[in-house]
Length: 77
Image 1 (spheres, one colour):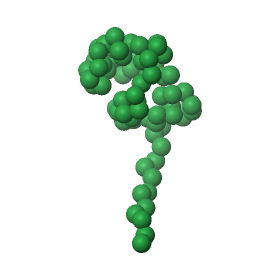
Image 2 (cartoon, helix red, strand yellow):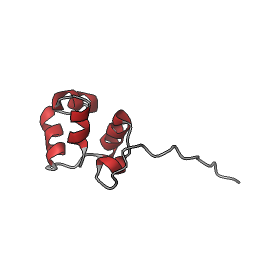
Image 3 (tube, one colour):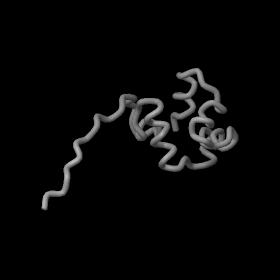
């Protein structure tokens, strides 16, 4: 997971990011260490905060740019 790299790029410490996520510093440290899984809602919050994709944070892609917003189609009845 690349959340430590992103945090360090922004010159933030773990406590600062933990506050943004409304979790303890220890919980956030466990996320960085991979000892605890990040809930989806917090992963999305981090992706928005860092302006990247959840795939990048999870290490599924090396492309740091966020995905373009998709067009949402309404149900046609």
